[in-house]
Length: 123
Image (cartoon, rainbow, N blue to C red; front, side):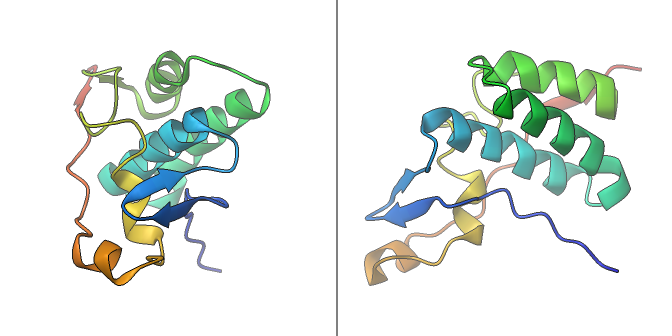
């Protein structure tokens, strides 16, 4: 069986603005998850990080950046250099964009691939 994680949920892009069903923290968590998938495409590598972050989010964590760093260290054995955002842009704004279906023609013309995550190995 092949599994592809899509960290997008029930978010919507409209006029270039991303709105996540559970608020901005969900958008931020989605961005970190997408960065992990981009950096570590093998499912068995990124899935433990994904489940760690999802579990913390579902338990109500508010500090997604700190939680992401803990999950990355525990699951991927790496440290994120930037805890503000995995894309060094507005949290959640870029990483999930590739998974969306644009709500308007304008949005489809402005779609860009996200920049890579800021991460370094801790070894």
